[in-house]
Amino acid sequence: MFWKLLLPSDREFDHKETQVNGKVDSAPAKREEGKKSHSSSSSNRCLQQQLSLEQSWRMNMYLFIYYLIQFCGHSWIFTNMIIRFLSFGKDSLADTFYSIGLVMRLCQSLSALELLHILVGIEENHFFPRFLQIMERIVILFVVITSQEEVQGKYIVCALFFLWTILDVVRYTYSMLSITGIYYPPLTWLNYTLWIPLYPLSIVAKAFAICVSLPYFESFGTYSTKLPFPFTFSIYFPYVLKMYLVMLFIGTYFIIKYLYSERKAHLRESSIKKKRS
Image (cartoon, rainbow, N blue to C red; front, side, top):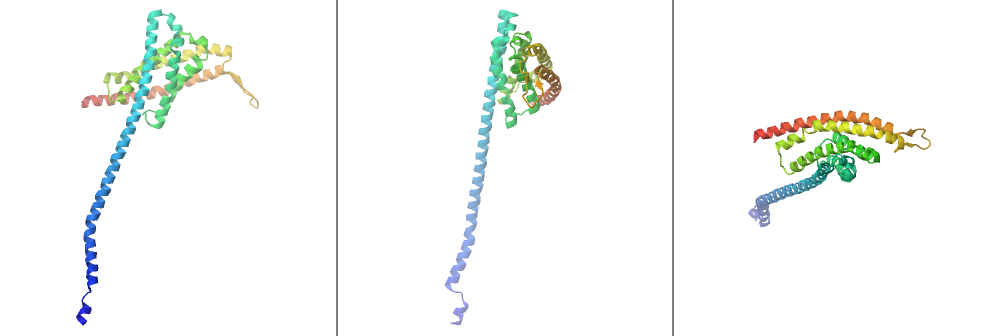
């Protein structure tokens, strides 16, 4: 009887066996759980990569369509101006705004979307220089030219539209091809070099258009207004245009500085790619 008390009972043996078996059996279970967690994490990564690829593809497709629309619009303007000049000579210069003014206004209005592209992050560009470039054109086109019918028939409007169109046809062609991963060194060089003679000429044309429009703003009083009480002063718009003319030349300094740095960086990058290839 005494030795039976010293020996462990059958229940204790069963309990120990289950503990040992539990320890032995838990190892493959943990391995299976690890495999499941690893497979789930890898599948999540693959899903995230697929979603990011789809999102980038959609953004690139949107930018390509936007650049294509701008390219088609400015190409139509350029072709129309050339054909009209070859057909009618100098007489076509006075009718430039009436023949292509609507399409030019549409293209310049759409260009305001580029500011949104920069803010959202789908287009790599600096906001402030691009903002100055777009606002310069919008002010000249919508405020100075569109509001004064007498200015619309001036030759300076044709010169201004011609300079804008050449710059934009090259720029949107380069942007459209770069979205698809196609790079032509001559086109890259042209895109970042053509502004050197043409952009200062466009600034001079803008300033000349403002000077031409000043007598009409003074005589017709367009946009000039007297503020209601309690304000005791009035807004004389020719003074506003003169102030804007000074700001135009100040902003030109920052834009040229930015365009030069951008040209230097991109041409250096294209030369490195050419050496590697």
